[in-house]
Image 1 (cartoon, one colour):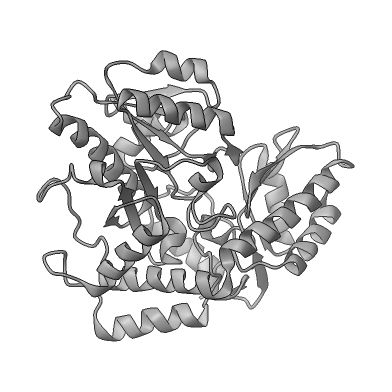
Image 2: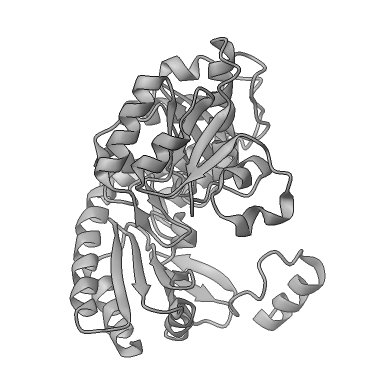
Amino acid sequence: MTTSDIANLDKQNYMNTFGERIPVSFSKGEGIHLYSDSGEVYKDFLAGIAVNAVGHSHPAFIKAICEQAQNLLHVSNYYYMKQQALLAEKIVSLSAADKVFFANSGAEANEGAIKLAKIYHYKKGNSQKYEIITLKNSFHGRTLATVAATGQEKFSAPYHPLTPGFLYVPANDLKAFKAAVSDNTCAVMLELIQGESGVHPLDLDYVKSVYEICKEKDILFICDEVQTGMGRTGKLFAYEHYGIEPDIFTLAKALGGGVPIGAVCAKEFAASAFAPGDHGSTFGGNPLACAAALSVFGIFEKENLVENSRIVGEYFMEQLKALAENVPCIKEIRGKGLMIGVEFTGPIAGDMKHRLFEKHYLTGATATTLRILPPLIVTKNDVDQFMKIFKEIL
């Protein structure tokens, strides 16, 4: 089948939620490279929107999921699962969490975090504490509750009335946050680096101040690490940059290396609010997904990919900032590790993404910001080649 054939089938049978897709279909991947059905080679600087952290077709990753698939895919959470127990142990050993629950996606993980925060206060006899403060321009998922949590009207407008209890405040505005806090405040949910809106890191002092207020007022501090987690920012979890330990944080995207899995990770005092029957999942944390995630952690450790994210990310940012000094249309370079945003002075990011695609480089874009999220295996030489093409386009 040609890409045109696939596109026609898609248009006839698939709900049009993604609009006119980029005109390419991939049949194979290796490292940071993707191969189209027509045999053309593309360099992946989007990583499936921060998913393919270990690159495509990593031998150790493929071996792990093939071996698991040959033995057991799914049994349900009625039974103990070795892979699930080992993965929960791994996350707890490497993070601020004491307990973990596995879901299938980032949206599901965030739903679980929202439920956990509400039931925590409910079981303490504080049923009036139901409001959750999130940030304007945030993105927390596509389900009804996570759309309500997302501080962007463009995502929620068609779905009113929304799930109640969410308040939105501007990022880095401590005065606005304090004004939003009340006796009804249950939790705050933050992306420490806002991804979908164009890679906007929160200020260190702001995060620490919000964190302290939460501790003082028994407000749960939730970090949405769906995109920023798993080494993307040059540390295993983005909260490490801020010197805090969230009460609850969520993971997905890169956790499974391409196999769908999400996680709700929490301190014991919060996690213990979930009792049997309070939450659940049919597929969440099944043997295949957990084997995939365990393999991702193994590759991270063996190949030192979190440190590579930091080193190559710093190099990438240096190159981009040096370029920006001589290119008037670049307004700002933002990010941490290999989560990078190039903001332009006007709405040309989509055109830049298209031009890079024509040169066989895959990136993402908002109206004004080019989003760069390569696999964590990317090298300085790969960055140099990207920069050469990027300069030509500019």
